[in-house]
Length: 399
Image: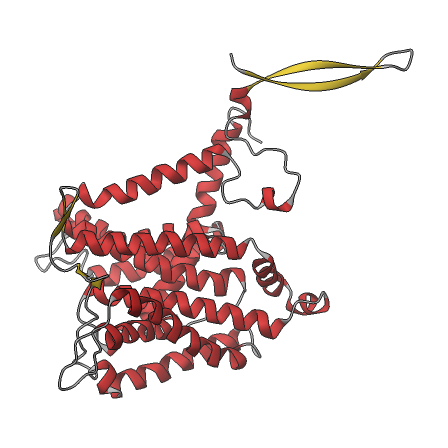
């Protein structure tokens, strides 16, 4: 048995101190947090070997997934990765900084149209510059981020229900512009084509081979979305455990006390809005090329509720929970479709279940899950995973 030696001091009757070695089995220490001597070690992303190996395994599996599943499932996974990016952005604003927003879909739409303008093809009705993806993808974060910077001074002066109403008004204002600014959006009911998926001169819409492996459009878009998700998730996690993240948490928990302690409220809330808007813009730019043709009707309150459901169901103030929630929200309709095939007796001739369409059932399930998570498990799916992990770490003991 492999052991780790520790020194233990004992005092004899004559006052001298003797040291003896205590051998601790390495199996006892495996997967357990170490003794932290600094905040940096305590807040490390991988503070245990188990977390590091779990993360590596999941990343490897995610990169291998498009080569093991069908095209339609690959497209769903790409959509889940895009939704996870937007969910992380909203979680930074709502979960970490405590600023409720119902206008997240506006910034997602702004990112989509930024990508379409700078990376799309010009026609008689819409503007398109045809730039490379390496240019329009960062711009899809910069432009919504600037819009968030414009909105932040107003949003930072209100909170709670008033903030929710302000962002809802922003969403309605954005819907009006999207429907009538035809040179950018194509107009309501018409829409426009998304940006061209040309990355560093390589057209991702056409199949190509890398090391003998065929990469089609679905696989290419999924891999790009996955790489962007990993980069932005690590950036968000580092932001959350930095001085800025602690300022977000202080403002969320008690903004007046945070201001008394020296946290600048205006600057902290503004930064939260800008970062959240930039993440939403990246999600919008990638979403436009994943779903194809985009129209102003897509960027509505229902899309904002989808992102809010990702935060609440996945887990508030956790990056991993946002990814879990996005996968659940995107894959739920597919699970319902599979349910109709497993239980044909409850499916009508039109494909509905118990007289309701799949969209209606999805909306009902979203509502029930949001209420259930808020009441029973406020930390969402991440909280459930934490409970399960802690149970097996402490087994056979109950604490």
